[in-house]
Length: 262
Image (cartoon, rainbow, N blue to C red; front, top):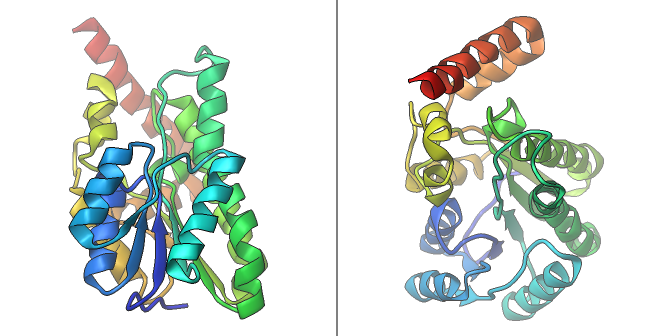
């Protein structure tokens, strides 16, 4: 279902910078009333001040934090029409990564979405409409070499979005998953030399991602793909999994082995 942002009540998490801030700016410019959430209170206040929005800093992952955020946003907005679950974290490593990294990745990248949906769905189902967007990343469709916690939890976020859409899509709830590849944000800079080597080709700005998001509101498509090539990679993964994995191993060897031996 299409979303008309004019006068819509919107919450964007992780909106103090990067993709979240760009989406908040575009929504506000289109006439939405925007609640800006971020753990960084000063960043949330800055973006909210810039766009004429409302800053509600705090945790958008834990149960208490999500409940408080949605209650305060609902009070300010008089109803939440769109929730953009954008906050996310990326820890490096594989099975050797500490349990704390895996646990936090699960809380922020997955349970934040579950808890938000738990709070929002009763009201949305009662009035027969609501819109949920989650920033999943292309890692949720494919994988991110060098970062197992990120890849695994983003796959789970995609699965939850699919489940929500299949379960509630005929009851007025629109679900969309935003799946960009490389975006020039602080997370991009924190990905390390090898991570940046994977993400840099074809990388785009947060503003370009926001452009695609606004366009996707027009038709309610489930997958929002700021990098169109992602669709081809996703299709290859599904239809020729062994061939796709062979290609990923080659990339792994090129980026990690070659750089470690250089």
